[in-house]
Image 1 (cartoon, rainbow, N blue to C red):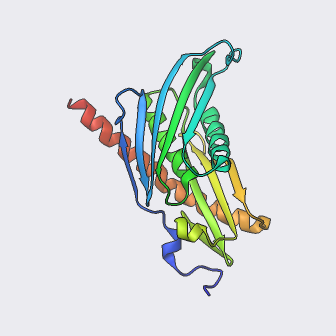
Image 2: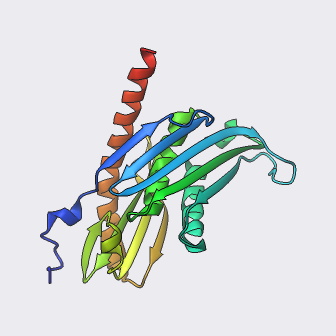
Length: 224
């Protein structure tokens, strides 16, 4: 059994990330994301006109559809985390009484699907050009026999005691902060704080990845 200090560095690294932007021609913004063996697509349309039945006075309506085959619990988790992240990040002042439609399709389940959904959605939102006051990302940390496992795959998730999924927000004017969290399992607060610290450190790498993807997109768009 490994000690609680986790000398195995393989548990402290994010899995490989790959992303393609603007791949859906009928979406205002889109992202195909691979996170390890997890594959997810996200398409965003809007902001556009909203029906009177859904309209909220002076507020942006966010409509999220998560397509997958793994039960209602996963949909609730993704919808709650993503709704909180989008509401915190999108500049609502510029978009009163309109709807933003976010559609996610899970193509391959490989672990940390909720975190991958957050990452794909943020990149799709950035691709769409909607006004945002920062960026957000998702990071999952699992606990197994007292060890923290960053960005676990399916096999690791199946044998864990607790799984945390964090949503982080970053902007030029603010330090990175936690804006939403989902937990599955029982835990002590000290373990939660250790997991959050590890996840926050990993979020810096994801935000760097976002910038690299956007710089690549902009350099290609300039020469079109």
